[in-house]
Length: 261
Image 1 (cartoon, helix red, strand yellow):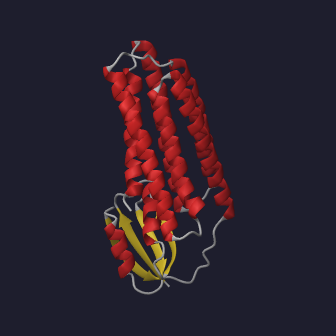
Image 2: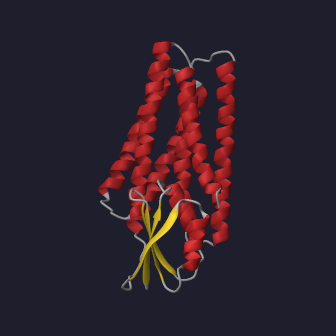
Image 3: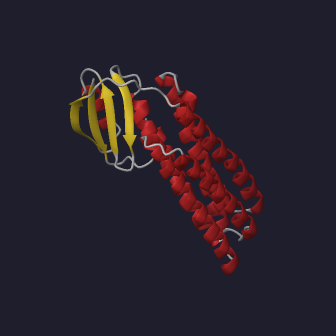
């Protein structure tokens, strides 16, 4: 068995990891993939030639470059069921808060909460694509990813249209109290997810990637809280529209990464 290490310069979150997994799925000879997202490295355990694997990675245009190929001793790659349970828990928390934030965002007229709910949904997609498609065919995985990507973009575009309507139309002041309270709860939820992931003390790349993704969500939650405070201080909906626009852009970027296949 051989071990080839690639540098993937544009791999900075689980979205790129899933893109690479789906791209390489079905290639004969691949035994296992290990992702080191913080250091932007991918280790491929394989038998036989590396050319097809290398070509597939280059086709993704993520800045892939082969670094080394060495002999590796046979390893029994088994899935850790405990990690799967943990990821299911994180997925459930994210999806629950997508529903909570979307509902309260619509009632409170806060585009920041609506956008943050879509970010929570995007996180659920990232975890869910892998979990739901385990053992499935490459076509099935790509179909799930494609539907997820288009759904995210559709919702984000609708959000953009509403932001423009509110920006150029009559000012609708969002309920800043709801923005702050719900974002605090979302912040706590993401904090719990981060705690659970860190508590596992797993050094595997996909678990580290999940920690990075959840840490980014914490920053977004803090952004919505700050926007709520500014809405109250300035008596304007502009801070809410600005944070909503920023998060919508992040959601669309994630969706485009998925659709790249």
